Image (cartoon, rainbow, N blue to C red):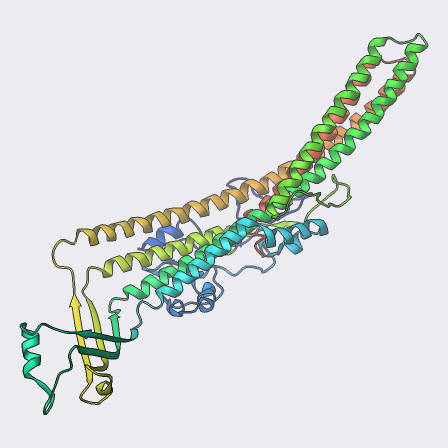
Length: 530
C-alpha cells in the first residue's frame, strides 16, 4: 500500500497543480533509513538520495583525469551523484516517471505564447549576465586544463652560447694556459661555451595530490556550469513574469478606458438633469472629478508599462524599444499544468543543488590535497645534450655528449604549522560546503511548497473575486438605470462604479499573481534551463 507523501507538512497537494483543480497523488517514499557513518550521511539526512540513472563505481573519478575541456565537460553525467569524496557516489533512489515533473519540460513546451518564447530566446542569447557567466565557465575549464598538466613530466629544450676569458693570474687562467686541446694547440682565447640539450623534470604524484587538485578543479568547473544554469532559469522566469505583468497592465488600461466611458456617460446624464432643473452642480463636479482621477491613473499605468518593457529590454541585452505581446483575454489565460513530482527529484532538476553538490565533492578533494602535504614528495630531473667550446666540436659524440639524472625526496620535518593550518582550513571549507548544500536543499524545498500552495490559494481567491465582480456589474447596471429615472442618488452610482473598477483591477492583479506563482513554481522545480 503506497504511502501518501505531502510536500507541505499537513497540507497535502498533488503533483499536478493546474489553475482549476488539485488532484491527489500517491507514491512511495524514498528510503532514508540507511545510516551512514560519514559526512555524506549527514548530507543525506537533509534530503533524499539522488537518482543518477546508472550505477557508478565507488570513488571513480578517472573521467576527470582527461586533459581536454571537452572531456571535462562530458564528465558531468558521471560526477552528478558525487556527494563526498571520502565515501563515494550518492546511492540511486527510486525511479521516476519521466513526465511526472514539470522541470523536465523545456521552456518551449511550458510556455505557449509565441511572443514570450521569442523574448526568452532573445534573452538567452543577449543577456549580459549569462555571457559573463559563460566566460567564468571558460576560465574554470582552462584552470582544469592547466591542472591536468601538473602531474605529467615537464620537458624543455634549449640552446646556449657564450664566451669567457679568465685572467692569466687566476686559477682558471693558469690551468688553461698549461693545457692543450690537441698536441701543440692550446685553448682558444677567449674561451667559448656552446651547448644544446633537453631537460626533464617530473614530480611523481605518489599521494595523488596533483591528480586530486585537478579533479577538484574539474568539479568546480562543473559547479560553475550548473550555477549558470540556475541563473538561466531565474532569467527565464523574470522575463515571463515581466511579460505577464505587461499583459496585466494592458488589461488595466482597458478597464480604465471602459470605466471612463461609463463615467462620462453618467456625467452627461448629470449635466442633462442639471440643465432640466432636476439635478445639482455637485453631482456634475463629482462625476467630472472621478473621470479626471481615472485618466490620471491611466497615465501612471502607461509609465509602469514603459518601465516594465525596459526591464525586459535590459534582460534581453537590447536598448529601449516596445515589446510585442499577444492580444488575448488576460483573465482566462492559463499556463501548462504544473507537475510537482516528489521532493527527491529536486536533486535531479535544481541546478543550484547540483552546483552545491559538486562543491561539496571538490571540497572533499581539497582535504585530500592538504593531507598529502604532510608526506614526502619525490622529484626526478634528467638532462641530455652536447656541450663544447667550439661549434666545430659541438656534436662530436661521445666526446661532447653530456647527460645527468638525479632524484630528490623532500618531506616536512620541523615546523609544520603552515601545513597544519591549511589542512584545518580545508576541513572547515568542506563543512561550509556541506552546510551550504543542506541550506540549498532546504531552501529549494520551501520554495516549491510556497509557490505551489500559492498557485492553489490564488486560484480559489480568483474564483471568489469573479463571483464578486458579477454581483458588482449587476449593481452598477441597476444604479445607472435608477439614476436615469431619478430613483437613486449620484453618490450611489459613483460608489457602485468605483467598486466595480476596483474589483476589476483587483482581479487583474490577482490573475497576474497567479501567473507569477506558476512561473516561479516552474523555476523552483528546476524548469527553464533548456
